[in-house]
Length: 335
Image (cartoon, rainbow, N blue to C red; front, side):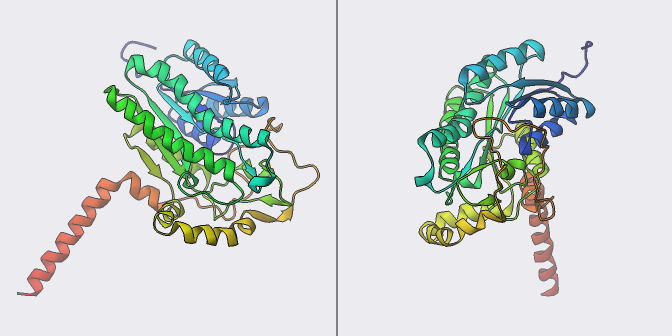
């Protein structure tokens, strides 16, 4: 890099080969960033690396199971050796299982927790070990509306997302105690149209589907990209996320009953799971699945709520100006 040239941004994305992670990788590649992609499947890693190069970025695909703390640390070492100091670390990787709690084996339950919760813990630890001595950097945790409101058939995933929220509170407090300039934010997502619904493990007869009309992964990626550069503790994406969180605060017990009546059918598609169905809980599914799932026809490509969140100061100023103009007009009319 020549003297005076802008530094290339170094970004790490776990779970970066499919769904939200793939969209996040593409978003940072458009910034011409150097992007380290952490995931298990070789097919997805190679395809995602090609996306990054095609969009003007630099790619470092690394095969890594985020549930393995030592593997994540080894990946971080290699990233800084090959790309330079990490500026942004995005924790996207997760696992899920659609099933009644009593039908989930202890081994599967532990696996979901290790990937979804400890995967983010391991990533955050590796990032902080490097960012704290430099006193700079940004870490983004990826949460969910289900970090505040559990739903039936996803007890393992909901429990892990609840844990991440508490984890963020604790670590942010420690960063403030240290007067650190490292920022830790969390983005809470609604249902998203990703390939997870074609490889999520299920003990039920029908294919998994989002509990509500999903958003496209690019909407989630936009929010995560924004969070990486703005000192917000948390960002909620989509009105359904906000609605669920506030409903739980005011009517949690009633919501238990409502979800008990609707949550089973609402998370199963009309099609039965075929004999050739493969899940990715323990092993990656071969192939490249990209960012989008099978729900393009119903997925939303825009979140007005996110737009308002990103520009809340401008929106508030506009609202105040509008109110002032209205009051002034009424005053003139009343004379």
